[in-house]
Length: 522
Image: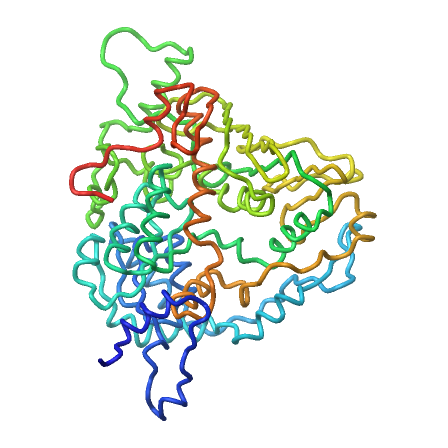
């Protein structure tokens, strides 16, 4: 039987990293091995979808889908303009070398494991890939507005990037995996706990390469932080603090649903209720309605979610602050920050979750939240606290007057010390302990050039293992989303992970899943 490129790609992914790729020269001069390129499609192209697609432009980009065709064309136009522009001067990166001192902390440079991984194949030439895409692929790329049509017609598609709003991740990825297509799904992996478990199960059943898009998981410095903890550098850890400044400066939260001012002769007051009505009316505008942009399918944007009238406060990107479509700051940054304590400390699903917040109207996430978790680990219960919206843990005294990065970070408290991971290199506290301890023993493999998306491509081809697969991603996502469930239930939750049930608040279980609109199914 002849080996097609499609069957080769599918077989290679199923075989795993041990699969041997036949070198092109063995097959004969001028013959392109069927494993050389993967045919990639992207759903949700304007934001992170474009970033993810740029990262795999060494492959064949064969289809692009977005419910807003104007934004799709705008992004493609910007890519074409960039490809035609003169090359920029190479940026002088802030890579740290071994022995350099930063605020009293010694740096250790690139790990040996990362250097060895980088030697496996060259770093991608992003500009050359973009020019190749614009000149040779873009004229042939198929554009779609409905992902269902794309999946039905795209028989040549091997792999699908899903970078839509959160509420559509699961249904698109599940439908793609049903067709045997590999999937890369932006974080958070899903909108609901049930969806996370469903995708992990579907990935096992279909044996496709399924990667969660939490790119920081593939970074050398972050893996070094995990190695500090696994080496016992701060002893057993029973307390972790994780924070981000989002949503400030990124998208609005804590706002009422747009609604016309109430009718009647009774004047509005300036109390909380009156002020909320005035704000909702001001957002709605004078006539209370806003026309849907010509090339936006609002029905496709809504997808699985309930009917909501279009308003420009929702799209593009501001959807993240609305319960119908996003998961707020916890869903946005939890996959980047909660990731590492879950990984390093081997945290299981929580037994207790409690979220406190500024006022929450049930539709738009509050301005700030704090979530308290109790999670099992091999060394006992770990108490993890999440902060967002500008809330933070106090500065540890071991920083000797320096302050925590307000943008976000992780502080681990162990029996023998503390570890800070807040951008750049991880640091043992205080600096004297960090400098004396040196770098941790390298235990983890590294991702070549920290290219998270290309790690997925290489896993499809069978030349690497997934950095952040769905089995792990589902557990991380469930932990994150249970914080949102506690917020929506307005209650401290006791959680039975084995049965996926909240045991002390029956109503909270409704927030573990959702009813889909007609036309959409996992």
